[in-house]
Image 1: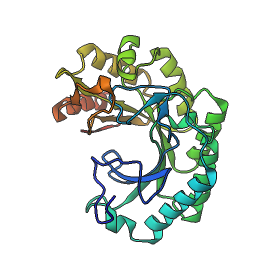
Image 2: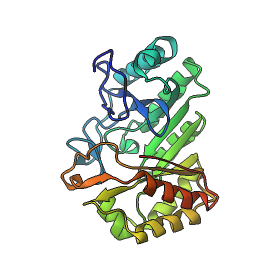
Image 3: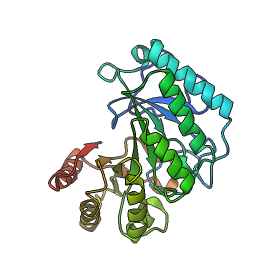
Length: 281
């Protein structure tokens, strides 16, 4: 990346300053600078969401991380952000605030055998740089929440101004298979969501898009609203968004953004339930 180039919503490159695991982005959802940690350098994930923007996505698990390299990179970037001119140099006006350290990347982070190690590293470096106001965010499909080791990591993140963004794109088996390309029931999602919410502040994150020019069906919307309503006591809110960039997968070739009006209307249905919700196209 050109060192004079501002970060943008459209540029979510996982590579910056020769770092392998750590990458900065300006996020629509955080409305500021998010420092990402990518634990899936081999582009491996257990889901294959049709809107995914990871080039060369494969089914599988991530490789172990080089722990020394990851720690050095995170320390380097945090020092540059906190004590240097990184934000002034790279973040656009209006987005010059450090919002979060975010476990996200080229696949499901909780699949990593080093997930708990990385949570502990974040804790140590947050303390080193006195980051009480900065959030720690895990973006997850929730598939590993039943794993006791992952739960230990969530307990650590909960102490670090932590929250998770738990993916629920669709609710019926048919729609989940079509969008996330996994065989999963809403009951299974519900069980893991409740476990997560018992350990850490949990938001539902949901992607909505047009396919072949067609918006999601009324049944998809109604099922989603019903699911949100049934889990109101467990969640802190809902984060809605649409695709900002062209999906990388062949099956995503006909996917485009939904309109701002579509997201506004869905957002209002959630607000009418008395649940916090926000949206970004």
